[in-house]
Amino acid sequence: MGGIERFYFIGLQWFIFIVFIWGARFYPRNPQPTWSKDTLLNAGVNLWLHAVKLFLILPLIFHLDIWYFQHHGNVPRLFKLEGMDPVWQFIAIFLVDDLLVYWVHRAEHAFPFMWTFHRVHHSTEKMDASSAERAHPVESLYEYLFVHFVYSSGTPLPVLVSYVTVRWISGAWRHSNFDFPMSSRWARAVNRVVNNPHFHGWHHVNHPSAYGKNYGSMLTIWDRLFGTHLDTDKKPEGFGLDENYALRNRFLGLNLLIARANPSQRPW
Figure 1 (cartoon, rainbow, N blue to C red):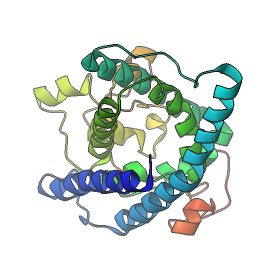
Figure 2: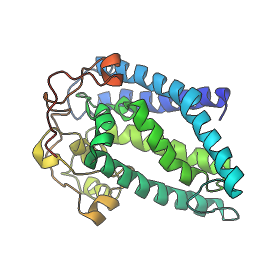
Figure 3: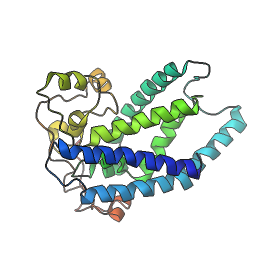
Figure 4: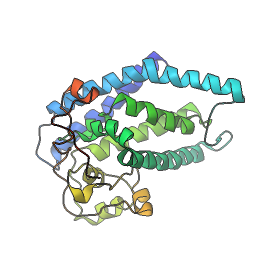
């Protein structure tokens, strides 16, 4: 992906985020400013991550592909999708990538090295659509390496672009401040399969009952299948991390992993 394409995707991504940030003001889950300080911080972090991806991560993956091709005659991939109908290509990459992201996300909470960087994402205390892009560059690096094996499956560019767009919409939606009341029958039905602000909101709640729960990305079925789901009618609130290992809510604080207080062992 070149520089022009990258700028196009940045614009598309933030158009999606703005729609969900602005839209949530009409049906909010929690009372909070539409454009908070956290939103502006997340925007800065997002632009920084795009720069890191463009000038470091993507060139690194490109050279790794060249090295692999020189030694094996092809590029690393989990499966091949050439010749399939585009609809089936989309479904295949959707399901495989979503399952892979579930396990990568679960590993980020299980292994100290990965958690060190993933806690940047959990440091936000005011959830909105922009929270989806709060991450550390090291986390972006290893996540790109994982999903690259899926994206290099021979999927045509239009299918891949369509999938990435759906992925961004899902990320903005489940991190948004939209109210998603479990009292309604339709919300309960959606919650059984599709991730949403209620289900994922509980993943970000700073309470022992929510630790190690609701890892899913676009679907909730993986959490239900592997026993990590948390279903409750109560609205999620109290986001962020315990002061013992929370990070300073500043650009340098997040990127340099500067703790607010003396870090202690996380409780899960």
